[in-house]
Image (cartoon, rainbow, N blue to C red; front, side):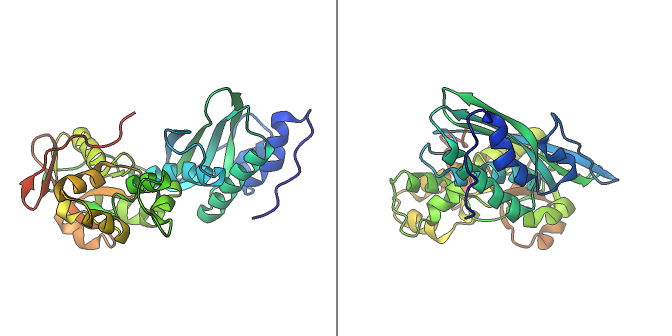
Amino acid sequence: MPAAPDPPSADEGEFGWIERLLRPLTRGAPGALDLLDDAAVISPRSGCDLVVTKDAMVADVHFLSDDPLDTVARKLLAVNLSDLAAKGATPLGYFLSVAWPRTMGWNDKALFAEGLRQAGETWSLPLLGGDTVSTPGPLTVTATLMGEVPAGRMVRRSTARAGDLLMVSGPIGDGWLGLQAALGDIPDADDYLAGRYRTPTPRLDLVDTVRRFATASADVSDGLLADAGRIAIASGCGVRIDLDAVPLSQAASRWLSLQPDQASARAALASGGDDYQILCAVSSASVASMTGFSVVGEVVEGEGVQAEFQGRTVPLKALGWTH
């Protein structure tokens, strides 16, 4: 990790934080104007629409208050990038807002900025602007991300059709188990699960596939069942999820093998959230083109979410995370 710049003098205040830690994160993007202005200039390519998403995270709500701040920064950008990936959009840059508790000092800010630097390098993502304030309350961080997509090609939640199959891009349940691992409630010898909770990976590798073949799409942030339900509501239809078919990591499979009620345990994994995989509705003709995705259910006539395990309907206590 590069050495953090020396802290600013007392009279530099917020501007020292911006100049020393944030300006390098613009990665030379001309629209950022070196963070010297009160606004930025965003110009998507000719023939493209601008796609905008925004997520906020609050300590002890979306991350643990003792999580390393570099992982908090990376997660902040990852969860927003996941939204763009599910829309079939290519990222352009981000705006940042941080409400710093007065107990946090320069070293905390430097570690947070290092996480932003790592994320910007990994995903070629420049900082375009934002704001910082102090607060007596918990650390609160917000990012607004900009992406672009060919005009009229953004993949919505509202365009699924009865008869479409539901497909997901990777393992489900690791985020929920990862929170329990980070709290020390379940074993996690190699820190795999806690890592999936703290630093998820947005599926930017699937942007082109989603844009070409998905009839509707959402990222799995609040739980597979909940986000499938949102596609259903937006599209005016119902969804059926086959819990037997939901892909699991080796770590989740080990946890599942120890549970006495397999149906309830699988439902819990499918409703836990924080997975940041992509859930798509896909016509049967396009399934073969969805490399890396697994079929987990279908879009049906009617409304609501139905989950099945070994051919039987599973009662659902909750579909996923709500605020």
